[in-house]
Amino acid sequence: MHTTHPIADRDALLEAACTAGLFTPNQIQKAVDRTTPGPARTAARALVTSGLLTQFQVDRLLAGRTDGFRIGPYIVLDQIGRGAMSCVYKAKHQTMNRSVAIKVFAADLTRTAEERQAFQSAAQAAGKLTHTNIVTAFDANELHDRFYLVLELVDGPSLDALVRQHGPLPVGEACEFVRQLAHGLSHAHDHGMVHRALEPSGILVTRATPSARSAAKIANFGVPRFEIGAPDFAAPEQFRAPATVDARTDLYSLGCVFYFLLTGHAPFTGGTGGEITRRQLLEDAPRVDRLRPDVPPGVAAIVHRLLMKLPGERFASAAELISHLDAVHVPVAPGSGYISFDTPIAIPYPYDSGYLTGHYGQPDGSGAYPLSHSGFGLPVVEPSPWEQITDEVVCEVTAVDLRNAPAPRKVLKLNPSVHREPAPLWKNAGFLVGAVLLAFMCVGAVIRLVAK
Ligand SMILES: Nc1ncnc2c1ncn2[C@@H]1O[C@H](COP(=O)(O)OP(=O)(O)OP(=O)(O)O)[C@@H](O)[C@H]1O
Picture 1 (cartoon, rainbow, N blue to C red):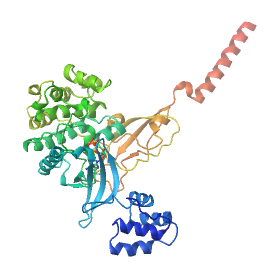
Picture 2 (cartoon, rainbow, N blue to C red; picture 1 turned 60 degrees about the vertical axis):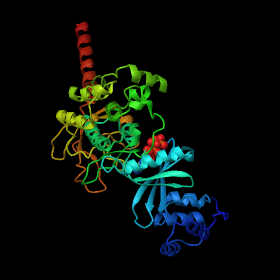
Picture 3 (cartoon, rainbow, N blue to C red; picture 1 turned 90 degrees about the horizontal axis):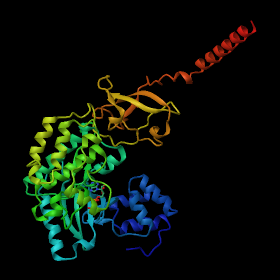
């Protein structure tokens, strides 16, 4: 609904915020105190700065909207994502103050009684799942013919976004995320639930904190599946015989996710959806250890066992997968909180040319991991030194233990003992002067010889 009054000044803005139900009586007085009569935009800035409204809220109010700020007992704070069939909002429970994510589905999805029933059943089943590696579903309801799910708010990116931003993960960290996801799947399978659409964009990762490492969480357990999701993460039986789908179907998709974490892409890429489907059904995926030689044979064997075409050739259960992962055990880099998603790392970089090579290690000097294999070693500052610098520099990077670092954490800093690799001989000025002098002396000697 659009308000009939244009939002021109402070008073109109405050009135609209009250109509939208954004202020408690106590907050109205605070809002008046923190703003001065005048243009609405100036008042809006003051309200955001004082934390009384969010940017999302003032933008919507200034656009003349007073609707869409409340979903049941929740106040909408921000829009955090948009999928093919839903919109995800950050919201806060009005009285409990708990922050949540609310996934609101398109009205088209719940037109018929069967579709509504499917959403309700999926939500009820998901409500039974309580596991650190599954996004918890707290509540489900309908608002203006739209079905919505109230979910645990995960403060980090999806695995898809993470790999696209940082590149493939170090092997130990990929194994650890897959182990966590297998624990989540095992819990769901024990409750008789199969996900059917596991893919990197539907797996969210929490930020590392001083006391906890990142955790991977499977989203969308409460969403009914009417059709196959992304074909590049779907198991052969989902195309061949959808009625036979079982827990091992999720293990195939988890194998595709594992492959993606290690290589940056799904096992079968390129071509249309139909072409990918054909290859899922008929072809063996290229060996992961060919594409990524530092993947140990034991880990590659697990990935390809998960990707077997026949469910009976995969692991029998997520629990069996976990025992195999434990047996090959590739450790996570010491001190790593896996990946840090903190604010961009400011790397003091003293050179205007060169590229970073070298190792990172612990502050105590232990450990020496190639920078390129450090999940958190890749600079994320703009402009990236990796792209800008063209002359070779060898440096050391000290990894700060995420678990003990005070906030705000600087994840990496260049060791002050950063040094430039000696310039090649032909680039050395002394060498050039010496060479010229020598040439003159030689020419002089030849002339003298000839003169004699
Ligand atoms: N529980 C959550 N906590 C935090 N952010 C979330 C949560 N769920 C989803 N998001 C964010 O919203 C984005 C869109 O999520 P959504 O689940 O709608 O994506 P999708 O699976 O691609 O879409 P769809 O299910 O509509 O096909 C995600 O990439 C993520 O950034």
